[in-house]
Amino acid sequence: MGKTEISLSSWAFTGEGVTESRRVLGDLKGVFADEAARAAMDQDQVVYEVQMHAAVPEGTPGGLFLGVSCLRPGDVAGEYFMTKGHFHARRETAEYYWGVAGEGALILMDENGDCRWEKVFPGSVHYIPGNVAHRLANTGTETLRVGACWPSDAGHDYATIAASGFTKRLFKGPNGPELR
Image 1: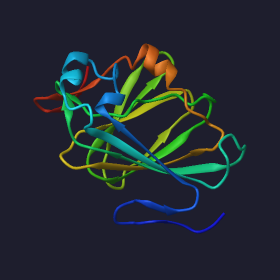
Image 2 (image 1 turned 90 degrees about the horizontal axis):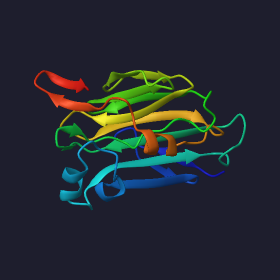
Image 3 (image 1 turned 60 degrees about the vertical axis):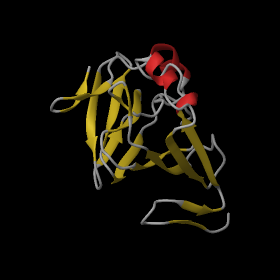
Image 4 (image 1 turned 180 degrees about the vertical axis):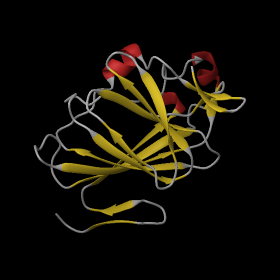
């Protein structure tokens, strides 16, 4: 594999093995509690972007992937902009997240539906154990940037969350973020 670099100021990857994805409000039907409010907003508005560096093919045992999520500030009827969220396809696999820029929340839900959140900020480190669904929410006024590292054979199970959702959601409250 050729040379790959990451900018420590923007956390943007360049080089070989880098992939990018982008989610706009139009891609997030059914993710937010108030679907009518989401549908009434600009469907081309970018909510988040993800860059990933893969030195090995997906599914390779023993490999690792490195990524960065960039989640824009905003909300849908008071519910913070967030990522779709997922379990890993190989449920037992864990992941690390770390805060790079901005303010946000890592929302975690175990397979019993118990839900909690951790504050994300520059320098925060978050261990996401296996069997735990996770998603990010931007609770600040600037882009939230979060680094991640996970096993290349973990896979992503978005379907479970799309079908059942998280048991709680993060909303703007009078004293800051509230999990309801």
